[in-house]
Length: 370
Image 1 (cartoon, rainbow, N blue to C red):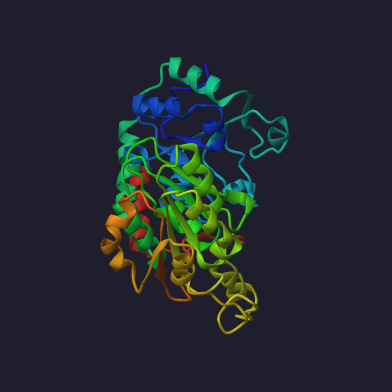
Image 2: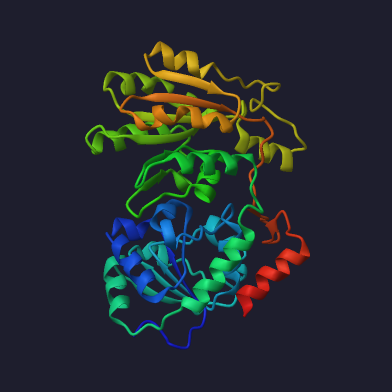
């Protein structure tokens, strides 16, 4: 037996290894059978969508997901490498009240101990989930409802403009959409706030590779793999410029890729570091420090691709027809240069920044600790 009936607040944490093992349907089956809350890593945000979606953990993870990790009493980690971006550099701060059941197929990952008393299973994620499904696991609907209520209470509390843009994009996507995401601030906003309808959609994300410029090539590969089908590419002004020549591939192959550029005219992820750690000494990351952005609309038009520049994401409703047809398009959404990315776990202390007001913090903790 793997699961113990003494657990009161279990969490299933899934990483992209679960998808690689073909365990996605097993994860959904287990979640629906037991009502155990499912959290994900950034790379696996599309593994828990629709009604089982709560959020992902880690440095830029959803606040509610990280708070649930702090209050649970067991973490069943399946196919997640549990790297520094997920657990932080202070091991004791990761799921401090929880027993860790860890499933990975890579012995090198298992050699890196996360908790001294962790229970390790060096096995295939699908085989492990099949075993779990045969066990008598209690129904955790009450605990799931507590987590859902905490999520409801925190919905929108950390939203900045980037999250609002992603939520608007989400509302316009069809069921089971395929979305590729580049690297930058928009990657984290998408992981935090991109809600897919249905259970078979995909969010193709670069994750820890930091492969800036991957968004458009991901979209091209995805479109070809589904018979030149519709794929939505969310990218930034910096990421798009890394592989902008691939617009020729999109046009030449008649691929219905919908490119949505979150354009803040800055390398936002880097400017945040330059702001927080280097006293706003910007270098080649802003308009005033040597970084510039072309007119993406004109460039796309030169390739024969329909394109438009929006002053605000509120104007996206006017692009609904473009998002639904079988032609490629590029939509550049203008955003302020200083758009923030929050929440963020502070490296030195493990605190989730910015801090919540005490009243809301206490209410959420009271729900999770009942």
